Every structure is written in C-alpha cells, then in structure tokens.
Amino acid sequence: MRSGAKIPEDMANGSSHYGTTLANQFAFKYLAGTLNNNVVWCQCTGGVDDQSIVFVSASEAGQNGIQFIGAAEYTIHNVAPRLVRSTTDSCINWCPVGTGVIDFWIEIDWDTPLETMFNFLVINN
Image 1: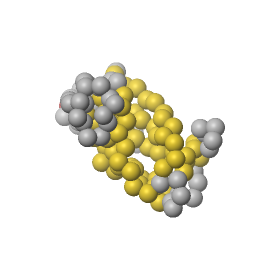
Image 2: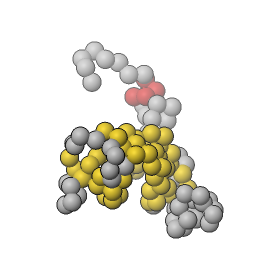
Image 3: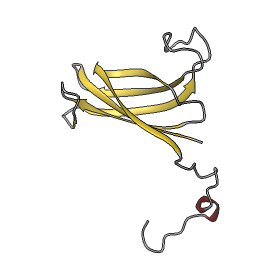
C-alpha cells in the first residue's frame, strides 16, 4: 500500500462488506486440452459453492504443460461458482449433485486449437 493511503475502518477490521479473510483458500491448475474461439467451460471441483470467490486465468501451454505467452489472446468472462443441484445439470452431467462447479466463458483469439492451461484461485468464507 502506498504511503499515506487509508482503508475504511470496517475493512481493516475484516468486515465481510469489503471482502473475506484468506483462511480458506486454495489454488490449482488444470490442463484443459486444445481449445479455440469461444467456449463455455464448466470446471467440476470440490470446495466450491455459490458463495465462493473465484479468480480464473488462462494461457497457452506447451506439450509438457508449461505455460507461456504466445501470439493468441486469451480472455476470461463471467466467472460463476455454484453447486450442482440436479442430475440433469445442463453443463456437467458427470459431476455429482452437491459438488462445486466453476462456470466461465473463455475466448481464445486464434483459428486453430491451442493447448490451454487454466489457473484457479478459490476463496471461501
């Protein structure tokens, strides 16, 4: 924080209005395979529910899974964590009811499929 910057008192005291503590957080990577254009992705994972805060990033990955910045632009949109509530879930029919899912759109500005790695940071209250 820059010198002299002030934060609201209730934020300094841990008010949930401004955010959450980082006691229950986890991060993981997922090698998604080859993707291009616009894709709605549903990542099934435990430890996620409707109240989770989720950050997602994506990049190209080499065949060995090492991420790098290539010529293609990757953009993540509309991240929405939730629970699977029905066996007829329209996005993931193999994910058990009660399991967490992270839904998001990914846009890859490239004509041919590229090996893609996702990075997730999940924060729970």
